[in-house]
Amino acid sequence: MKAGELGRVYKDGVIIVRQGDVGECMYVIQSGQVEVRKETHGIERKLAMLGEGGIFGEMALLDKEVRSATVRALGEARILTVDKRTFIRWMSEDPTVAFRVVEMMSKRIRELSEELVKLKFGE
Image 1 (tube, rainbow, N blue to C red):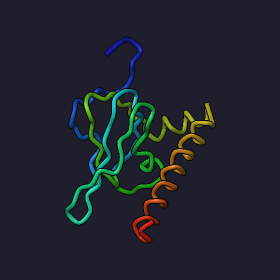
Image 2 (tube, rainbow, N blue to C red; image 1 turned 180 degrees about the vertical axis):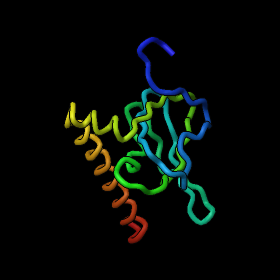
Image 3 (cartoon, rainbow, N blue to C red; image 1 turned 90 degrees about the horizontal axis):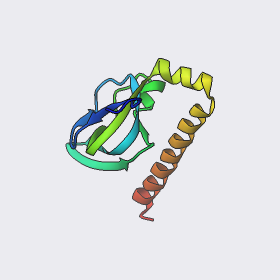
């Protein structure tokens, strides 16, 4: 790790979070890519690929539910872990942090809504 670098490096294929585990933090992708996968009725499907600047696990900061998907490194990925206390401190120092997280969550909800319409109505 170079001086001033934060986060942890995950090797290709290493699971960062596992669906069903209790979550207490979110993650910021500093470099590399991750794959988000969800198992339903015994079938695992790829939901998304996220790259540098992406975040995942943010719902754990807002609710006490278990992880909704599994996330694994694609290639080598440097990931910063952010706990609730740190996130709240960041928001108090820079309120745009909260806005960016809500903006990203809104984008994901919109994409999911479009997928639901396609599945339900064949559009």
